[in-house]
Amino acid sequence: MNKELLKGTTEVMILKMFDKEPMYGYGMIKKFELMSKGTFKFKEGTLYPLLHSLERKKYIESFWDSSDGRRRKYYRITDLGCKQLVDKEKEWLEFSKALNGILGY
Amino acid sequence: MNKELLKGTTEVMILKMFDKEPMYGYGMIKKFELMSKGTFKFKEGTLYPLLHSLERKKYIESFWDSSDGRRRKYYRITDLGCKQLVDKEKEWLEFSKALNGILGY
DNA sequence: TATCGATGCCTCGTTATACTATGTATGTCA
DNA sequence: TGACATACATAGTATAACGAGGCATCGATA
Image (cartoon, rainbow over all chains, first blue to last red; front, side, top):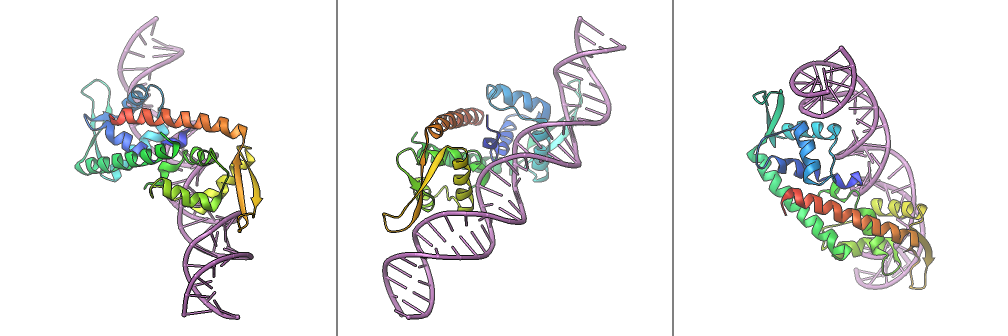
């Protein structure tokens, strides 16, 4: 899998993960791999800096929780993040539609 | 349009353009814009270096032609380029399918 | 005939972003 | 107790599209 394809899509993927429930970094890496049937294998060096960046932009917010045994840093999406998610989903749809048009699909 | 989305997809788009007939750089920029209804606007600083790179990799080959009035540098796809195009199309399909899966489409 | 926009090719330096490599700590199980 | 999975973090690197600029030609028009 060409990693360049990921560029510009990581943000929408990550925000989408928070759509249902709070998640923590390590768990997301595993879940991504599962959900995409191995197509995506997010690296820690990719995900953690990205989570910090999304938090700086107020799209997500974090809290520590240890009630499940291990100490984990959970993130949940904010209202601003929900708006951004909608925009980014639109952007992806438009892009993939245009590219599919060029490729003749 | 987030330009990062383009990364990793420019090669397949350009190779696809040569599927039918030889093309020249400036004409491709105009045609891209038209085909994607304005979604893609390839810049000269993007396209020309990429064409040179594809030629170095033997995916395309160039020839000058002036028979149509203006002197233009045309490119056509090679057999190797055709193989690469098939691979890249597969890669795109797999990627977009996986991402659509995550986004719930 | 002078000018100006469109056509046509090119390249250097910048910027954005995913990754590699590495470090640290804790829990689990043989 | 030693190995491995879990869990978070960051400094440096590689790469790819782009911005900005240069140069030349052609057609239209003032």
